[in-house]
Length: 441
Image (cartoon, rainbow, N blue to C red):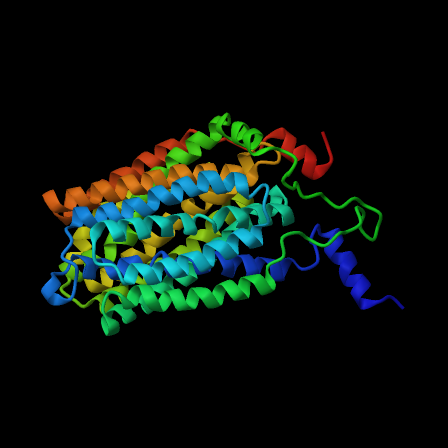
């Protein structure tokens, strides 16, 4: 009689799956998602930063708030570029732990701040700590999963930071309502520290060693793993000489300018135009990540199912839809609460469908051999340069012209991102990646 465990192992190998995949997927899902507890929470603090000192705020202008928000994006972009190289050399669990504990501490310090330049410096440092999250996760996923499954896998991981974003909007908005704007920083920081301990307990960087043949003697497809023998300089040169990554980065930068318009400024917009408290505005805004959960997963699934793992067609179509929704958003927000909620669900879907593809799946696919984490870091670096630029121009436009023109600017960025992604419409993984994973020339 056969052993059930051996039979299960044979099924996993025959299907190309590896032992422990489910646990690993949930560990990465939660670990990266947890970073948003100490990132998305800033949107609930922005109204307090802008309120007068007499009302318990700091009396900052929208332009000054824009400087703070842009500083964290620039630091995040720099960190992505550097940490993309470090993730090829250092243990992902160590980098994740450093980032998670660091961002929690910096959120606590930000809550004690009152001076503009202190806040700018601390939130910039927080941006660097946040940059220690994504590229180690990409490194782990590439170690476990081949290209043929990566769209669905990274799409699933992408739902994690949407779920935690929902929790963060509710938690930080409620904390700001009860404890003042500083509560939006301190409460999520405590949750983040618990999440870091959970990550250390459950995340494993590599799959267990397996035989190279299944129970029937057929070879199991290999997963292309990163090559730590490449020096950081070699990885960097292989990355920046890849023209596909530049196009992905440009598209992601433009998308992020629109994305962080909604994430950083949208809650304040609702609070002002609908004349409601920050807690109620946060509850309405929490539906945006709910739409994002569906977009993150379905976009990756659609690229694998209908487009032969080509990521650009789905990316381009969703970005065009996002531009149209953005044009309608300010008018709807001023006239209908129900319409606002429905529109935010659709906006979330159209932001995070392409965002997950551009930030993880497509760079991992189009990277040259052994540079997947470096490629993700490079593209994400460009993405956050765009986000920083977007926050700066949103603040300036808001002070000068008001909300409508600022939101129209978000729509223009989404449309430009679609154009950049469209150039890669027929792009597929390099031949060397396909050969390594299938064993066939």
